[in-house]
Image 1: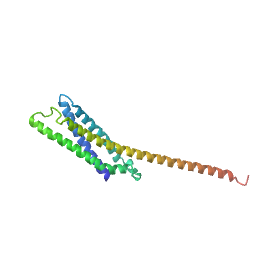
Image 2 (image 1 turned 60 degrees about the horizontal axis):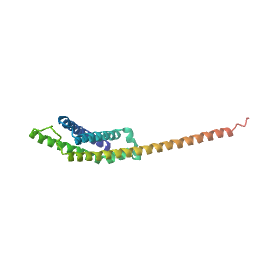
Image 3 (image 1 turned 180 degrees about the horizontal axis):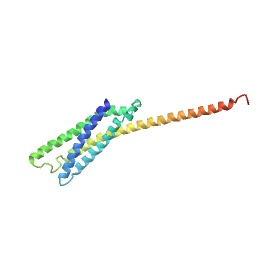
Image 4 (image 1 turned 135 degrees about the vertical axis):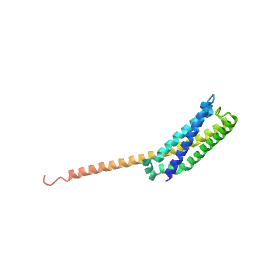
Length: 184
């Protein structure tokens, strides 16, 4: 059930991120210039969305979820719930702030003429989004390392089995050689 809840929360963040991207593009396309801080925000939201999509694919993958006996994906699902929730709240807060500025701008008649947030606020948003993205990237990396260890252990097990099979074959060949029938 944890995986389903995490997947649903990731979908919520991706949906909100899409709305935030739409707002960013709307402001950027309707203003005389696309402010660099807005461009950076759009890039961060896009990058975060890509990383979250990768986390979602891993969480939704039934093959990956069978690896939980040795940790890896099970640990990812258990540890990502709270950070994804915090990220969702951040993106919701960002959208709320934009909607508040939209309302104020409409009353003044300057709606969509320029990016409504101060450069400092936008940079802070970018930094917070980047921290979330980095956390998710680290979680994916840890899962990849865990998977690599599992693969290495499986390869070592296969090699050990092959060695035992080779030894058994040699022993069987030797026993056939030394057990020559007495009729000769």
